[in-house]
Image 1 (tube, rainbow, N blue to C red):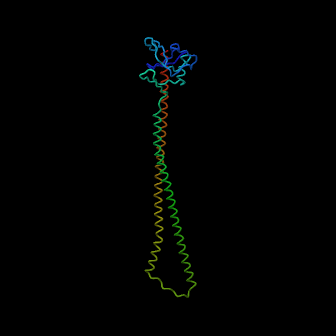
Image 2: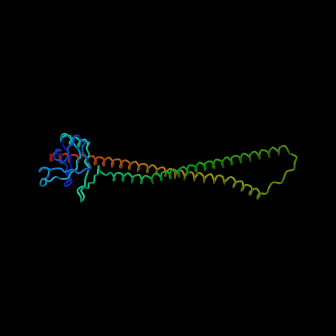
Image 3: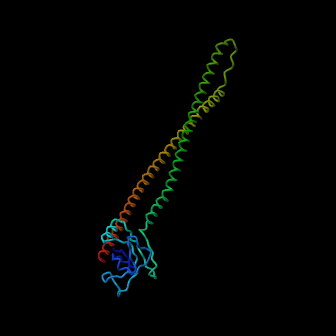
Amino acid sequence: MYAFVRFFEDDMCYALPVSTVEDFRPLHRTDFDNQKVYLVHRTEENGSSAGQPSEAQILALADTVEEFEDSIMQKKMKIPKMSITNSGNSIENNFGDERMPLRHKKALSQDHGRPLSNSSKSLAAVVARLERNAASSCMEGEEDLDEDRLGEEGEDADDEDEDMEAEHQPHQPHHHPPQPQQLLEVETDCVSAAVVPRVLYEELVLSYRQQEEEMRRLQQELERTRRQLVQQAKKLKEYGSLLTEVKELRDFNRRLQDVLLMRLGS
């Protein structure tokens, strides 16, 4: 049976027979403690120092060296990165690479996305308000036109009634015709009453066109913002895939290095 060990003094991994480990007689592959410090005799090829045993950590047990190679290449066995402090027994294990840059990037994209979503909501609210104002303006303009039409029809009906009364009462004395000045004042009042609704209608139409133009401009800004967000999302996705590929290449390189070191040691 072989033991895959890592020596603390030089942080090197080797596949050695279990007989090189002092006071260690395993019966199964799980008969070891990866948190325990073992004394292992290193050969001259593995960098022995005057025949003294060295402190090491047992990472795995196997019947053959090829099993270690297969486990490393298939990611079945994780090899932690270790750092040696002043005391040889103090070990820090770090399984896997840190992904803080990727998480930080995602957090930044989310933070940048919040103002954009808020601005989109505010723009949508402005557009809705403009549509309501335009609709109310159109309704007011139509109501004014209906009132003018009804007023004109009422005046025509009054004129017809007066003509009918004049025909039925031919023997009544005729009144004196109004003076020219009075006729001018009456005509001026009628013209003013007819012009005011038309002016209001034109103002409402102008306001509606301005609001419609503003709504069109806001829609263009929304579309431009949406395209920018889509482009940013594509870039973030490409960046994430690149980071994943780099991570896989690093893991593969580390496994190859471990296999090479193990072969050199054995």
